Image: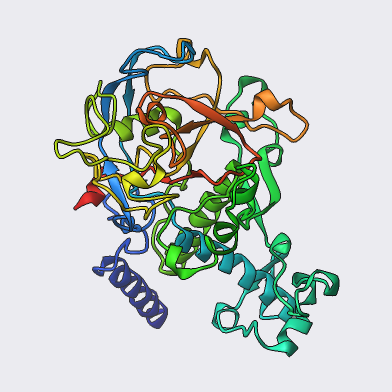
Length: 425
């Protein structure tokens, strides 16, 4: 009996010793003192300052035209709105950056055909150490991935290459707007999970399609393919492809953070129309252009953006077509080419009277148009003007639109992400 009591006392002492150690509550970072101390949600370490982005601080501005509506469109009214802070790409997404997306999709599809990976919960997990060294000029490799290559009747001089139409990315997201509707309360989560495949290769033929009786074949052949244009803005990308790029960029970043046991971050996305205009103004609330009023030239007579000067002197501003994404001086927020070069997609639906009923806090009109919807519901707001536009479209308050499934040689995009301002340090 005495030995049993001794054993029990020893066990209790050992247990108390474990409970009393400095490791107490370490797994969750919580002291066991009976007090309310709060619970952290994972590591405070995230992605840090996003590469190639600048912080646009929160503030209030007058959204809408800062000059006379010379076209009498009546599609915008001057309205004071407030915008939360966000991070924005300093430049338009370039050919090199978009090419990283294209190569990632190509390599992941080829890896699946070659068996470089394994099935995990119904999804194929790619072995990227093998996928990144696939030799696409090897005939044996091309035969194994024949599902991704051009059919014999589509080859020039018999050259076997990857078929751009086969490069599709699976977009997956949770439709929070639908889930938040009161009438949908209580429905299964699966009702709001959206999945679809999107072809992601840029439409290089836009250079010829956009301009009738105009010789632009060299741009069609070389703009996305030649390294000389690597730091130029990507074009020929539809609104839906831009959304797919944002989805991939989010997945690519968060997969890395998860591997490093860091917190995942917000989604990359297209800016809303209000966010874009606020960022373009660079703190100049009622100025006509990102650099201020009233002219398209500086004191020395130099043009301040890439557009169509005068009656069509395309080369006068230093670029015949597009120019580098970091050309000209940035605005006061550090954003390049918020006027000219290429017009930019926003996430917002284009509706002529939208300014009349939007909230004055982070205004936005969003609509996920289906293929069966009428064309009117597929219009997305364009901002900034482009290399082929006259100066009016360079004004920060000028609105235009294009259909979400169309591609143009003068439309690109840039991304934004919602992150804390503390990451500026």
